[in-house]
Length: 178
Image 1 (cartoon, helix red, strand yellow):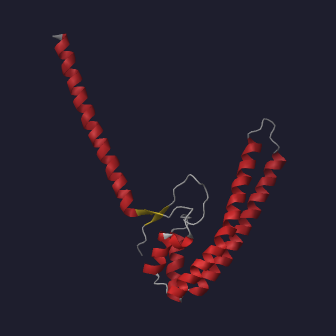
Image 2 (image 1 turned 180 degrees about the vertical axis):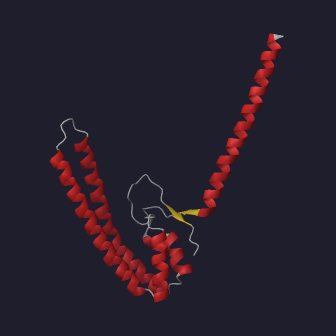
Image 3 (image 1 turned 45 degrees about the vertical axis):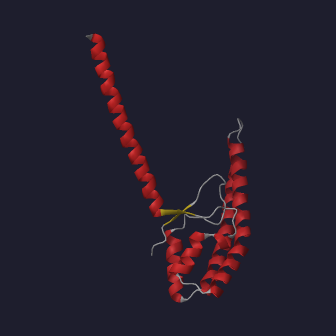
């Protein structure tokens, strides 16, 4: 009788675990499918800017850039991208040096504070270069396009689809609806 009781309990436990597994699998698949519908992957970092579908689709479909505007835009981006990458690489190396100093048993606080100054200087230069770049982009847009472009940039400023900040991260662009 005890053996039959144990078998019954085990049977019910297996059934309950099976139901839980099915529900969890369903939730995971639903969330994966839902996220897939609302976000799109940016092109891989190694691809040329002209192949970047997130921004190219936005410029073509939403802003209705002419061929000339598209060429100018890609020229500006190809000029800006390597400069910005140098800044991002510098920040990454500086961050590595910062943490190397921080974890030492005898941390040099003066050195850590000097890193803060270097971070600020690089970020200032990057922001200055970005401002110049955005002003150039603004000059190729009509007033209507400027508003849509900067609304889009403001809304999606976290998406750095064309600059590799961390090689292991996947960058996701939000849905490009207006």
